[in-house]
Image 1 (cartoon, one colour):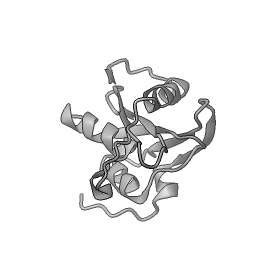
Image 2: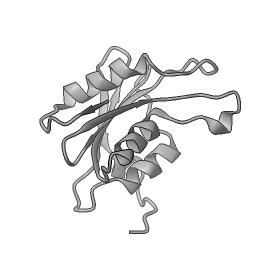
Image 3: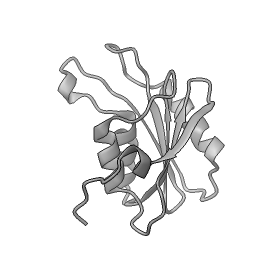
Image 4: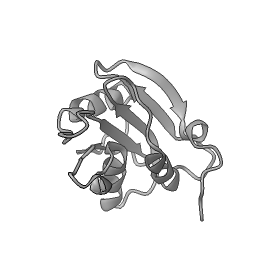
Length: 137
């Protein structure tokens, strides 16, 4: 999903993550995850976790959303909302991918952890979740 409106609010981003979570393909873990990222241009992209019988081929919701944004030419993510059953945090791989697309001007990448009902369980930043991220640029 892409929405080019630059005024997407934090609650709208959380709602987008909760709504897309229903599309998660999680037949093995049963742990559905939805994510919505807002880019520097104001566009919003969503993603879900997609599992596979060969677990190494699974993809997380956060990475799906970032990769979808990247496929349209977006390169900076300013916010991510992650909706799970209980407000779980992104895994290490997702944190590293988010770091690659985080703002380089010192602006924090805001991370919203949302439960299945849409309540924001925690608002934090990527820097708090992944201090000293590995970056080449």
